[in-house]
Length: 291
Image (cartoon, rainbow, N blue to C red):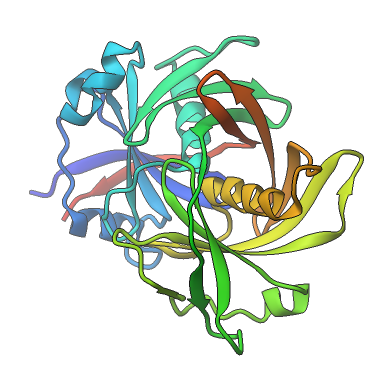
């Protein structure tokens, strides 16, 4: 008899996830099971799965547990592959913890959550939640990016925000809209573990009222094009800020097909942190029979 799996469905600016509560770490989903659950025709549908598990119940989460992060976001892409982090997923994960009573996040307080990219701190924001993604890093050396709809390869800037990204600047919205991201872009050289690829168009003017603005589309590794990618939004803002030079602002607004997210940069003792803010919504809950 098939195992019945309770689940919830949530999204952050259209980046959607299947949420599975597994506090004691008793559920072991195979890559194929994850892929079926995320299939939009034969399953629930989603860009990935968020498994809600106590940090102490996972070997990979023991360091997070020792630091005081009770909960660990075990994130899998839609094809079943493991990913280090997910910015939109982190806000949806937090929404689930708070709305189900697994955790409390009062105004002015914070919640620490374990991930494969380290412990991330979440606070409330005017539009939902803000996640401190930690110290970011610009990668050295250009990566050439080839994509359907672009006539010649374009240089990309590697950005690490706990997971890998390559950001490509495009001159017009016409070119951005003309991209065919049903086909995976090609990176040269290809990163060993792959990368998410962001295509961005800066606003004109770039900065208004001290806030920078860009528009973005993204191809996520292991998923394909998504309506939004939280860490990709952060990486895109950081790349444009880097290109703009020292006078560039620390606050950014990023428009994606699924909505708008905020990015800000702050100085900390261990370096420059990037923070992502935006909404998180739970849509429905149910049960599904596992194959």
